[in-house]
Length: 116
Figure 1 (tube, rainbow, N blue to C red):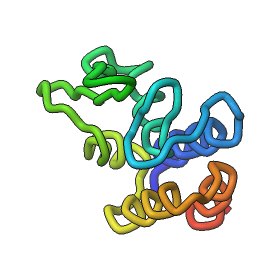
Figure 2: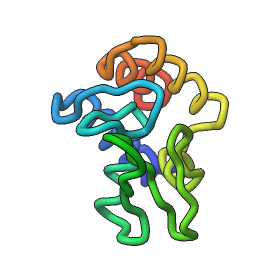
Figure 3: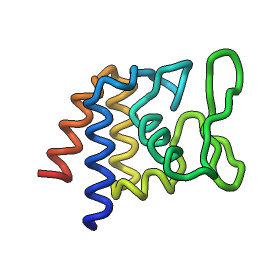
Figure 4: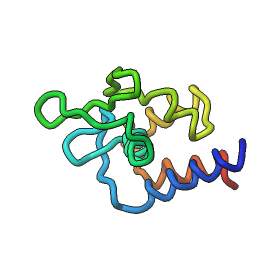
């Protein structure tokens, strides 16, 4: 993993530990709550104006990428690739998130796998 990807992953891990984000399951963003990869998308959108949240229905949001493709459950590949993790790990993190693991547990898993 490159230094840039490690730095980006560390920022993501820090955000998961920060208590700034409330946890959601089943979607990237629901109201003011995010799943783990919703946090990654939110961080990505703050640095890339072509990516942004769009309210879809009720209190649910979709994440729009630079091609205008909306993502509601699975994050765009650009977000995942920037973190330097594989598709299998992405899927495992989604399972952890929706399986009621805390953001801190997800952060610890990522630290152990990539940052220690």
